[in-house]
Image (cartoon, rainbow, N blue to C red; front, top):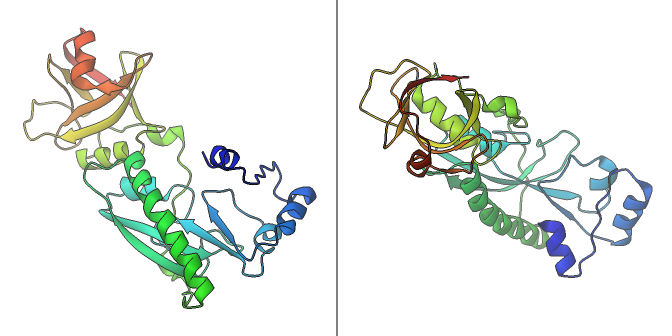
Length: 262
């Protein structure tokens, strides 16, 4: 989207395979920028972020030093946080450790998943980044060092993170599902086919399901967990479209009890 927007507006665009490529570095120097603003990009070598006289500012989707790494939004959801935030900071050699310039808290709503939260934080983050650049220009920001003792990791999410362990408590499974929706999506196996789950909710009534046991009725799909059961609300069976469970059941005929494989 950024590249497309740049082309549409006739803005200069560089897409180097190698961030240390001499031609790329020469092009950056030719722009004579005072500062670089960095959002959702690869790790920058010092040869890049050291070019402008005022260095480079990064926008990160957490309240640093919490959730340092590639997937702060997903891990905040996975860990069941109710508040996260945004941080602008000076880029240094070690990833996500630079001095903090500005921060903003962002509430995590109960129905948020990674997609909805990221969209909301993108809007908030754009405003925060502009405020940071304006503050640096005025000279009224005081960079604050991070307390590294409070740091927590947010490593890259892979498909392996998507497998659901049905022996875990329902609340933990819901948070995992939210964290991985829409991509790569939490996943289990039903009758030999991959079943992606995008939304689920705990239910108070208990149909006596063992962990990993799935009850399919005409109206709903309920899975047993290590605590209370979960109602699967939005799913995608292998080879099918993503849809709400009510719509899915109109075309899916099996009924009864089945086993979900992790």
